[in-house]
Every structure is written in C-alpha cells, then in structure tokens.
Image (cartoon, rainbow, N blue to C red; front, side):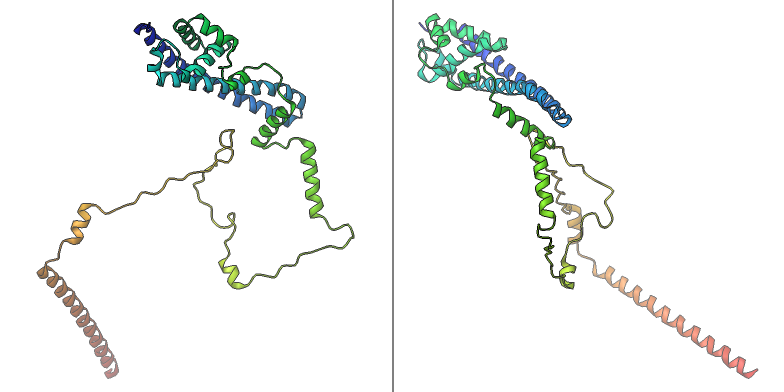
Length: 304
C-alpha cells in the first residue's frame, strides 16, 4: 500500500524546516565557539592553563555537535532530493542509511523539527524498522554519526592541540616552556662562539648601480594620508589579505569620439592662420618703431 499524499507532503515540509533549523543552530554554535576561543586565549595569556584545559573541553564538544548537525543536514537534503523514492512501500537501499541515521540521532539533539520528521518516517516505515534503527541491529546507521554521539572525555593530546591552535590564532606564546626554549636558541645563534673568537661575516659593499636599483624601505619618504588597516586574523581565515578594488577602465564617450573625428573646415583653418600671421607682423612693426624712436632720442641728445 503506497503512502498517502498527505503524509508525503508532511515529510517534505518537515525536512525543509529541519534543514533551515539545523543551519541556524550551526551558525549560532559557531558564533558562541568563537567567543569561547577568545576567552581561552585570555586565560592562556594570564597563565591559567588548568582552567583553560577544563573549559576547552566544552569547545571540543560544541565542535563535535556542530559536525553532527552538519551530517544530519546533508541527510535531510538527500531525502528531500530523492523524495520520489520515499513513495515506495519498502525503504530504498540507497536511503536506508540516511533514514536510520536520522531515526537514531534525532532524539539525541534539541532540534524539534528533526524530531517531528523522525516521527513521520517511523509512521511511514513501521515500528520494526524503527527498532532496527534505534538498536542498530543491522549496522545501517552511519559510523560517523555513532562516533559523534559517543559521550567520552576528549583525548589529552586533542586538548593540547586545541590550546596550541587557539594560542597561535591569537598570537600568544604558549606553551611558555617552548617559547622560552625558542628565545634561548635565538640568543645562542646571535651570540659569539664558545671559543671567544667572534665570527663575523664581512659582506662586500654595494656598488653605485646596485644602490640606484635598490628599493628604499617603506617607512622612508612621505606617507599617504589614506591608510588601510589589515583585517584581524580569525579561525576561519588565519592569513587575511586586503583586496583593493581595481580602477575602472575609462573609455571616451561617443560625443568625444565624434568630436575628434569631425573634420575642420579649410576656410576656418585659413582664417586662423591669417590672423596668426597678422599678429606676428604687427608685433615686428611695433618693435622696429620703438627702436627708431630710441635712435632719434640719442641723436637729439648728441646735438645738444
């Protein structure tokens, strides 16, 4: 007996609601996890390592829960994409794993929409099918779902790795023992050798051509009044980069190109040239008259 159309429509609606709800919860948990990581960084900076090791377990558990919700979201999207196969009476072998995984994991989450979708799937396939999924007697529940739902303390190595990653992300020297050893090793490389003889590496001076081709440091010279602050690193983007907008390619408009292509009338061009010649002639005549006047003044002065 094929399932009724009303049951199939309810399953479809609940799957859509479950997907949207799962995404919202993931975004919320991710934002909370970022705040908790910032708090862990402050504890490490203050030297409260034991408190940070205890509290970082909450971050690990939150990350595991977020990964579980992401897997369930993918299963819901798969069922929604293959909704036509759900109309059959028997469960399709390709959908057995996502359906039984949802039936197994939905009660262990706080997503009400997913729990309602689980009830509709149990109503469609029967109680025996649901008991097999709950007990995982046939082993059809996904192994990664079973792994995410295990309740056990995290491995100490995983806790240390989380703390190291948090310290590296926020630029904190932790663990302090490794940071001190690193500083000591740097100092040893900078100091003189143990024999007391200073080993200096003398480099040849640069020539004039090399100095002319060299690029000056950035802090020398006038600074631009406009400065762009680089983005701060985050857990999503550990090495951010500033992307500047590309200047637009300016092209002349249609009016400018039409004005350039328009020919100049020869009569107008001739008038302009004639005017330039007359101006030059007037200037030369005026200059000659001024020189004659000056000579006449000098002759008059000599006669006196």
